[in-house]
Image 1 (spheres, helix red, strand yellow):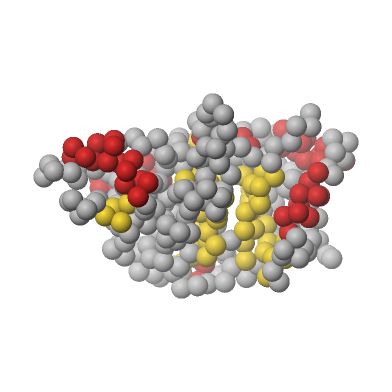
Image 2: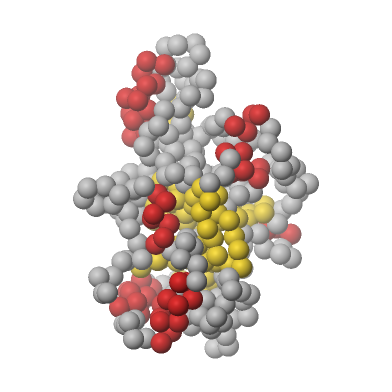
Length: 329
């Protein structure tokens, strides 16, 4: 098929930023911390954010702010990636998309202010929609403390963790909801993702060679097996792979490569197009290494609905594919 006419690749870099810059109303791209939710209603529930392999709550990994020019219903658009960081699993991944028109119930029609307001410095655990968020992870919290009924959790696991780390003592105190939340050692370190356009030396090489060809269609059931097969046949001598390595070497700190439409796949009859890939360099920022098994990847590739179909203000699950680290030198 004809090659994609997608624009140049954009690179993402992790940089420290003040807390107010990473809040939802600033429309950030960010790594770690609590999710900066876009739409304040229709959030994925605890079941959707549980690891499909071990069943434990997933950790928020990153959000990419990716509006679609010319699409009124996607004036604001965010893609949210979650992963399992709990050993011995450390394998589950899920990704969700949400989009809003410029005029919506949650944000001003005008661009956000560049001056922080005092209230943005504290952790907000209730959205404008009224939805309460888990005190540990910042995801939807339908459970509440049975004693004080004033703090919320996504799961029994996170309620137990918070109880053990101080809520047991604070629960009976009248001022226990003073936003002094303990470090639960669940969230990843928080960074802003700063986006820059790549200087291309090989315009034909935009993403990792597994996904190089602009249009590759797979049957839904065999998708992961066929992608794995392609990945295993990439050798060090492959010309395209060598060009890719040379290209990324120009910016070795990149954690993200964005290029909506560079490649596409077909999952269960529905076309998905490439949105971005997460580079292994991000692992250096997460401080997640542990004795035994910890999170790891070679590449995480995210594909989204080609039409970016609008489903009111809810969050739509998309597709993420993991290429494991290879032992090949």
